[in-house]
Length: 358
Length: 91
Image (cartoon, each protein chain N blue to C red):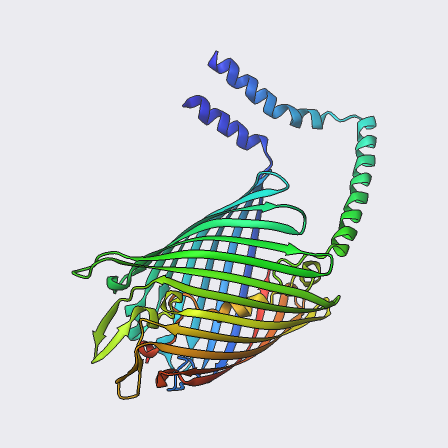
């Protein structure tokens, strides 16, 4: 044992350890005319501030990172909706060779809400591992696994585990075309809880994206995502004569299946200024959520939504005035139709903010 | 025996560091030439990176040109994760 410790110490001293600190922060103001995305249409101004720090240890083919992320969302009028999210993690990257590398990580997140929403406070433990293999400089395959333990500290009925396995292939061609093909299988597991038996849901996701350079500084992209529920489960509770679904409260991806498709146009005007416009259409079927009228009566066994979204983003790097700072401005509009009247709404969102990286 | 083995391994590990420190004038000159060569290779690599189209995020623009830009951030922010849902329960 002594020998092992001695050799390990010698190994550490024989390599040059390069430690590097990374700091980034963001400050955004959102003007949102429908903060809950519902027909009730409650508007508010949201201030989003984040501070992130990381410490990197590089040694030969290995890079270890310790990081911390903190995001505070403050709602000016609906203060109870404000929240604080903190994340602590370790990530490790090992380069086995020029063609293959391994990423491993574990992190812990805590989200604290305010007022009545403290019922929805949660903590998450997540661990992942993925292996990337490059066939060439422009073609690579990534496969991996991720685990999430979502724990609701004040509401254990909703606590669950998620397991996810994925495979993704990226390729770029001489025609200045890029292709991304991916797929994943996820499982959501609810443990037995105070008389409620354990249950599980499985979901399959397929994804394809094609990018094409129109000119050197202009790119067009289109994608299609298909999501299918292989099996479903739902947890609910009654409060104040209303039935609440966990899937609905958290907009959980397991709550629905369907497809999403979109196109985007990206234009780089200069090395410091770029713009992006995007259109997205999504159809989602919520087979465990019935469609209701405003009186709470069931009008269809499944809620079905069609959503159209459009967005424009401008980004300007102002490093020449303030080192490491960029300005972003966004406009987003989305229109959602649904057989559930509560979910027939539109939403307009403006945002402007500063992004700082040290 | 164990201790002897341990010291041998330690000596092997630390040897390249000692060797580097004892570089003579001639060696230094060769080293400089090699570094110049390395720089040439670096320039070549840089040029090559400009020429080869690699688009990992699939936006249709060569990654080399969008380096430093972060359009994906906003998209990620819009993709609501756990606890970010908007629904009946939040009214």
